[in-house]
Length: 416
Image (cartoon, rainbow, N blue to C red; front, side):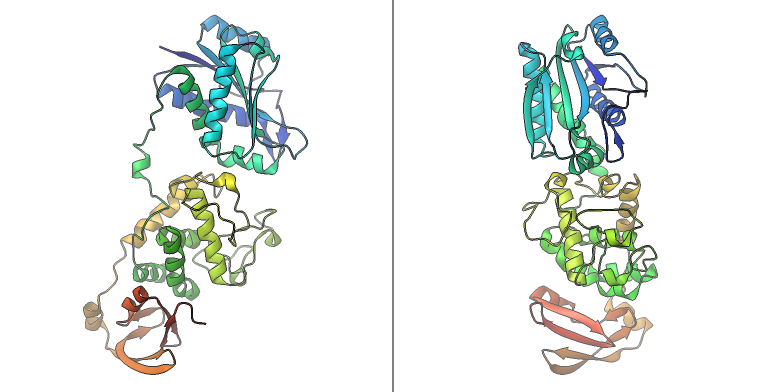
């Protein structure tokens, strides 16, 4: 069996590089353990210099690997310089041909993953762990911890980094990477067609006691999401979680037209109202949310240049293809995505009365309709937050339907 020795840099009294609230020793250990699990799933025998937060001398790390007799040695680190440098680079010992090959395999795999736009290349160095190991060895500087954007990669795309580094190691060893899709098949994709109707969305929101504005915005969530290829139910339920069904209650209120707690380009604290984006209207706010979701999911055409999303960072592309994987990425909470996935199931299972069922419960009323300025009346059922009128098919013909003050306004979507 192939043996690989993984070396998470620093540890214990040696924190390594610091920046943006992160410590190199923590990031290196976390990423290394993820890499180890992936390699083990490919029948690789994995050893570590440390698996906890302890200090180990550099020579001792090399000695451990030499005593075991592993096939390769890979040391995992984070970079730091002046807060502006960014990107990934890998190292091998000068003159070590196989070490250079391993180093290049890992770097190429990271770049191919799409995590970085900045490739700093393969380099050589007289590092102790490269010099004193007697097997093929490489050292990986994953990102610059003191650069804010690189720090976000270390925080939110660590799984992708670990997978990319693992693929590079496996490629060097001649082992084909096989994705573990058993769990992924059970998860909820962000990209896809609507899994429920607008009526189900509105009925679900009503049952949850949502703000009337949230109910009224369901068609807008639906149309903007559909156009981007995003399941509208994902967007709608995420907004429900972020805004408390648009009852808010935190630092934001409904005047922000911000459906998902989106922050400004510079970011800032969760409790700082100035760190959160104010949008001109709800259409712009929902478009920003949809574009951000599409970027995370890796949708075609993203990242895009014309978007109201203030944090449309290219490195986010493809970092969360499923709703469940938004946890720890879009938001710090690990349960963030699973909470939204449960809400999606609720919407999908929401029962909306048919016209016939509604007739049995409520008497039909005369409903006023403004159709391009022409006043009409039809029989239907209207009450606050619930509308059962036989005009929904018009949405498929390019019309926009608004419900206001007991009347229906129907116009083409491009009409003002």
